[in-house]
Image 1 (cartoon, rainbow, N blue to C red):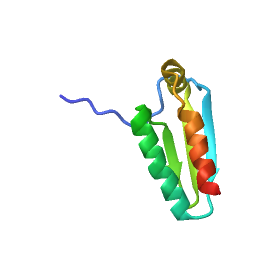
Image 2: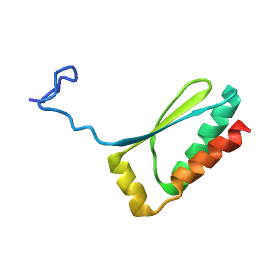
Image 3: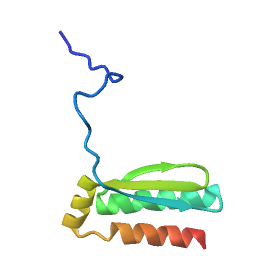
Length: 92
């Protein structure tokens, strides 16, 4: 018999809240937003690191949880600096 997990059921215990780094990048148009997202995809592939991303027409939210922060530190990546530089280039 297969067990089915009820996704709507309350969790069995308290959830631990780990520190998260968050950025919100705002752009003047959808074209700029799309270009930034394409560049972020290339950066993620190059660095083999994929942060949590949500976006709308003229903004992108990126968050990196504590577990991923440890991975970034371990890899000594320039991911965050490059991400911020890409956003700055799109806004000019």
